[in-house]
Image 1 (cartoon, rainbow over the protein chains, first blue to last red):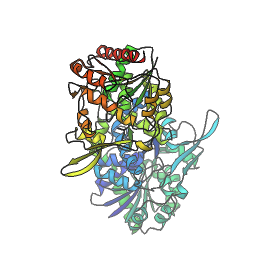
Image 2 (image 1 turned 30 degrees about the vertical axis):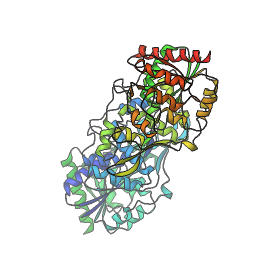
Image 3 (image 1 turned 180 degrees about the vertical axis):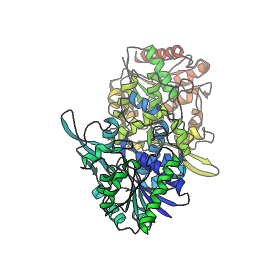
Image 4 (image 1 turned 60 degrees about the vertical axis):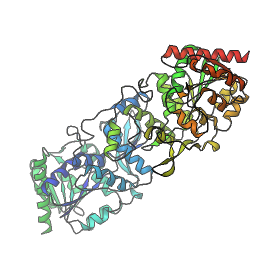
Length: 318
Length: 318
C-alpha cells in the first residue's frame, strides 16, 4: 500500500510514528512543509523536516517534541557571547550539525530534496521524506506589535512571540513561484491513500497545498484523501492553530477545518469523539466523517488513529 | 611606541602575550597569517588568527596551544555520524561558534578584516589584529603519498599527516594576486619597531611576506626589523618547521633562517644561548645578532625575550 502524508512538524511526525506502527509494510511518502524553514546564523534550518526525521529516526527530544535528545547548547552560548542572535530560537549543539551539513551541501549546489535524502541516510526514518519544494518559501505572518504593523517570519511569530498577538494574515512568500520537489507529484499520482495528519491546517498542510500543482494533484488523484482534525473540542490539541485559523477566517472547530479543506479535496475526515456532534455537519458538506479518539497520547493510541484513517479511506474507496 | 608583529599561530600568539607584558603601553598591530585558513564543513576557519585572538583574549586551551579552553565536541561527533569529515581537524563546539559567526558575516559581504575586528570586539586581545590580506590565500604542500605525487592543503599536511612525509614544495596559492588587507601597509609604514616572532619562517611569516607589497614595505620601513629564531640547537622549538624549511632549501639552524630572511629585510636577530656560536655567522651576513634565552616557558620568560628584541631594535636604530 502506497500512502502519501502531508506533514508539518510535531503533530505530523507523531502521527507518522503511529502510522508506521499501524501499517508496517506500507510504502510511505511524506511531503514535508518547508514554509517554516529559516536562515539562522547563516545556516539553513528546516524545523518541520527535521522534526519528522528525528522523530522517526529515534533522535527526537520526546518531551519537547522538537530538537535532539540529550542536547547541549555550547554553540548557542558562544554565539550569544559574540552578540549574535536570535537567542529565542533554541538550536542545540547536536542539532547544529544537521544544519551545518545541510548548508554545506546546499552551498555545493545540491537541492534541498537531495540534502534531505542524504540526511535521512543516517536517520533511516522508514519513510521517504520529500520537501514540498526545492524552492525557497517562507511563511510570513502579518501582525501589529507595539502599535506597528509588520510582517514577521513564522518562526518569530510562533517561537519568539508565542502567537501572543493576533495573526492578521499568513502569507507563504514565494509559494506561487515554487515548483513541487522531484517526486512529489509522482507520489501523489501513485498513492493508494493520501492522509492529512492532525497538523496545522494553515501553516503546515495549508502551505504545502499552496505550492502550485500539489492541491490539484491531490484533488485529481484516484486515491481517497482522509484527514484527521487537529482541533478537538473547539481548541487545538497542541500548539496555537487557532491563532492562524482566525487569520484565514476559519473557526476553531473540527467541522470548520474540514470545510476549509473542502469536499473538493477531502473524501474523509476524522473528528474526536468529543466532537461526535459535528459529524453530521461535515457529512452535509460532502465529506465522509467518523468520530474516534484523536489524542496522540502514545504510539498505540496514535496507531489506532492511523488505522481508523485507513479504514475510513477503504470505506470511501468502496 | 608602535610595534608591528608578523604572526603565525601558537608561537606568534605566545610571543605576543610576552610582548604585551614587556611593553604594556605599546600600540601593537599584529599582521596575521591567513594562508592556513581552510574551509571545513562549509565554514571559514582561520586557525592562526583565532589562536592569536583566543590566546590574547584568555580563551585559549593552554595545554594544546590552539582551540578553546573547556571544549566539547558534540557538533563534530554528529558530523561524523552523518559521515561528514574531515575527522582529523579538531573543531570543538565553542570554536564552531567563531567559524559560524565569521562565515555568516563573510556571506553577508564583510571582508575578513572587518570580521576579525568584530570577533575581537568580544575577545579584546589588546592588540590590533589584521589578517595579512582579505583575499583568499591557501598554503598548499606538494608531497608524495602512497607513491602518488599530489598537493594537499597545509592543514592536511600539518594536522592529518603531521608532516610525516617530506614537503617537496610549499606554495601559498593565491598570494601573488592578493593585496594586503586595509591598514597593513599603513601600520608597517608607521611602525617604530617591526618584529618577527619565533613563528614558522616558511608557512607563517613566509606566507605573510609573500603578499605583494608587504615584504617591500618592511624592507623600506624606517623602523628596525628584529626577529627571534624559531630554531634552537638546530631543531624547531615546537612544531615541525624543519620539514617545511627543507622544502625551501633552508637548513634548520638559527643562522640559516636569519640568512633566509636576509639582511635586506632583517636588521637584528636573536638566537638562543645554545646557538651563541652562530652569532658571528649571522653578523657576517649583515644582521646584528644576540644570543639570549629563547624558550617561551612562561609569560615572564617570554616577556624577557620580547624585551631583548626591543633592546636589540634600539641598538640597531642607534
